[in-house]
Image (cartoon, protein in one colour):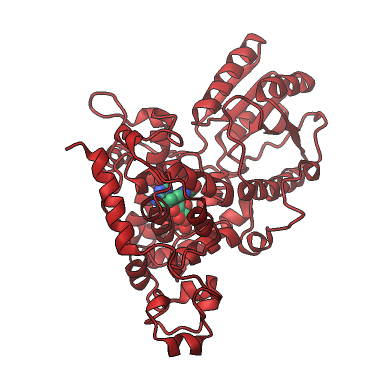
Length: 476
Ligand code: FAD
């Protein structure tokens, strides 16, 4: 009887443990992707991630068709659809790679029991992490709350060697499915996805190409260059990892191979690998603290008095705060579905500390606009910036958007790219146009308050206000 392979956040054919196990079983394959926006607690994808998914499914469908098979697309509640497809396909076994959110785990566990009772063989695998979250433990057997010890411990565990695309392609008759276009994952009116299409090639081939380009390029000066949003030193692999077009094992193997071949410096590789482990740490946190996107990890922040300031929040979303680095970042996000990590930190800090808006509101905006919107990384990072997270930045460290800009975008190239109305300003004014002499503004065609806003809050005053608010919950 056939083996049903249920694809989820693992949209790839290479190094896919569930798929390979199904192939090795010798059973004919039935391949399923299910869009589940109905099961209890499952968070629907945001707009940018839906766009990505649409493209990614088209790409994986093509890859499967090239092997002579088909990917069935179904929509609905996993608890109903998966058993139905298994029955239609007369499957004798089902394979999937694990998920780590509480709602997903509940869905999968219930299905596992039900399908096993029906006599199916059910097998699940680790397809998206270097280490299962429960295998990395403190001496007392609990979860880690600090990154350094987590990393040191995790790095001692073995890592699976990545596998190539399996060779056994034998397909069973496939039950009918939906047409991808009927899911309407891509926007039509208005079509806001032009910048996304220009920036990304979703899918396994796109991921492989991005990885190769990074190993040949950005990785070579990653440690020194990773904080520069005006340059391309980071991998931009985040959406490929998010949707599982690449496994972290494949990424790790590629960078280590380049290091072993003497093509890149050890310092660059180690810095990059530690970032991959931040992703692992986020999943470790999500697994052990399932409310990561809703509940302050440090419960003292439950008493923090957030402001509700729709005007400033809207200005932040639209990239109209009057602080060029923040505005460039927020517009990069809107146009391309991605933002450089340094600017994510500064922009998130601005919303939380300058505007005193609850970090959860920022998390939701990023969830909707990032192509790499990730249940673990997004929540853990917002909490990190807020100061409420595990091993977080201290709340009293408040980024100054001007000095951050001057340090990490020294020639203003990043700002000029995404805030073109400031492009004519000299480097000395590009991060603080309100301090530019009138004739400099005039020459650059900048009319503050008309072509570009005045700063929506004063940095020094906002900083004092945030620290004062923070004192109220310190309790010491
Ligand atoms: P690289 O520097 O090339 O890093 C390689 C990979 O390591 C990344 O693809 C990512 O998977 C992982 N990684 C890198 N930095 C981090 C980090 N700080 N935390 C966890 N994993 C990391 N990352 C997401 O993948 N999804 C999100 O939704 C997300 N939301 C964020 C929200 C905020 C407020 C902040 C400050 C950071 C967020 N990050 C998120 C983390 C980080 O900004 C991105 O992973 C990174 O910018 C992706 O670009 P890259 O692939 O070029 O990174």
